[in-house]
Image (cartoon, rainbow, N blue to C red; front, side, top):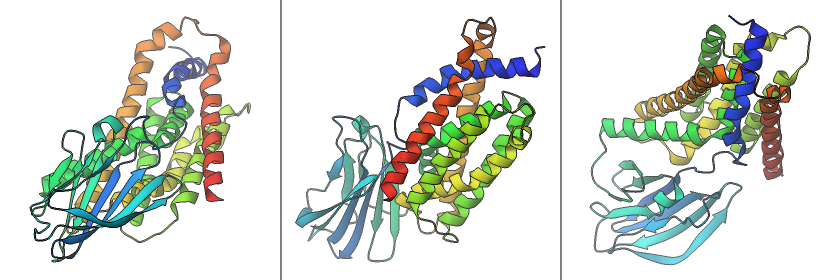
Length: 339
């Protein structure tokens, strides 16, 4: 069996190859789900809010699909934020009622994203569902089933973590920190899970409130700090190398607030808040576990090849510098958005 320093070196070499696909996207969360909110004001009349990500695939356009019985009233108001575009307008569907009408979003499949439809009716009911490319229209009817809520929010959680390159890069950095050792890996990933689960629940349930912009900046900073720790040339391993779960648990609290911000964009269904929150968190864990397993599987497959010294020595440092460069870019980008 190889000595631990040699195993760590070979793990870093493999990491260079694994990090390359994630170095291509410049921003994080470019495929955030769209939100279509329909709030009934009078019988057959409603206010509509349509929020989409400011980042989109070239040539892709998502738009609201209104029922034939409905027409837009007045001029839409458009609000542009640092990461989103929001349209607000009113619709008139009289003499038809909103219940039984189909609302949707076009262009989801090309844009490679989803849309959450949220309808607030005058009788107090709040109905929600998630639309995907092949199911672009939803008919407003009765309260969704518990199974449907679990399925939709678990899928949202998986998609959020898989498209959240900043979160994935933090997990990737943790894998570099433990250098493929199973015991520290389990403790570190568990600490990160516990940390972000706590703050996700507290923020989603309204017990803590933090502005999204500074949180996103601090998440990018956490990735940069992790990269700096990985690049350290200390003769003796520091505390974070010896006990990486301390960093994972502490910064996990911060990442949980980022997850909560994404969940706040789509909202939680009335009457099913605990279930939807649990399903969203389970989805995040499934996506995170799939990423960790993919990295470790690739390590197991490519380790014999990389162990023959076919990569130059500088390749051992490349993933750390790539990680730090990405994190620095995100820090500058998000700091500029705060000004």
